[in-house]
Image (cartoon, rainbow, N blue to C red; front, side):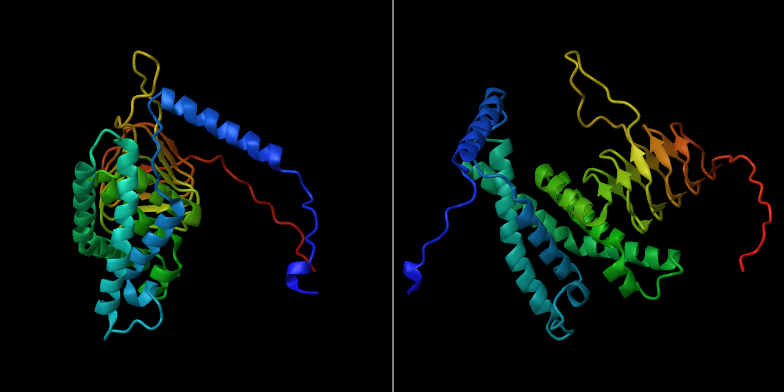
Length: 313
């Protein structure tokens, strides 16, 4: 019996009604968005595509560590050129979809001009992004006794993945592609458990030790040589609303962390407060006010009594 003669079994589920119901749900959603002027019949930036693009850009930044094993000192410029020639047009396509979606009133010429400006400016910033990432990797190596070499930090530490995504996303955010930037930030969040809004400003030699559960809000400002441990939150204490009760967007509402500050695990710092330079914030501290430079902030624990018992056999 040939393959064409094989009778396929009946599908186990009747899904036609489900397909129709999902179509109606999509149409209802889109109708509501259109009524509020929030939906256009255009493409939308792809999380899947941006994940691949950021990986290629990462390999262009660190070709002999994040690139394929066949990259050598002799051919790395060729590899970097090919990576950029591949990634930048794909990134331009994602930025183009964002601009068409968020500014449907703009003509094609205006959109293309903005796309070229954004992607060209990001490309020009890549050498400086590489230098910033070098300072972050070195800060981690200098600050972690478990790190045996800088390459181990680059390849193994989740904060490097998070901050690489962030430094690219931050540039795109400032250049006028905040939606693409936010998707890149959320890709890093899902990959590492570290949640950094692309609007956050972060200085050089930044280090997040361990990293899981760290949250850094949109308007946070972090100085140079700052070290943060796992489960730290730099968040907002409250949210302003307008006369109609809607949240005010982009208002400064997250902390300012000055240079050489260390924040230990589980600390929560909320609101537009300033942590003065060279301060140390202890673990599990809840802080909603500014502290001067050189402060030592810690949680006072009740005394703990330890009584000796019988040793185990």
